[in-house]
Length: 158
Image 1: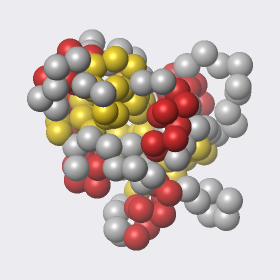
Image 2: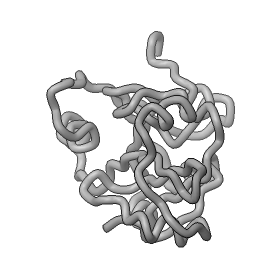
Image 3: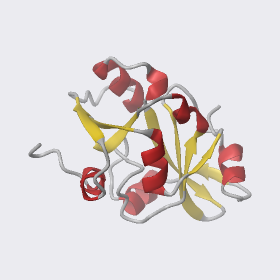
């Protein structure tokens, strides 16, 4: 897998977590990275999850939701026992995670942020999320995703 290594894939290898990498040719003109991944890989879009960085009460946190939905900021705040959440500044998200927007993975982030994974992930044996680069998705069991990120599981997709 030369040239496909990212901090996310390194974490998965180090922890010996079963996973599969799926790559596709990313089109920078596509409006939705997640829907592009689902289409390119021939997946049901609800099984592909996007990683969104938010600012919660002045600190950063992460919501992982299906690409078909939107992040419910109030639900995420409640899941993390916070008051007010808003989408984080892209530059702050990239700095904290070590990833580029559109390729932010919930795994292997530079700074470990609190994570909430949408409860719908448990409906599938495996889910897909960014492996840390645009055009690279990782297929992983939802339980492993939750365990490796220390995530809270809650209904956070609107």
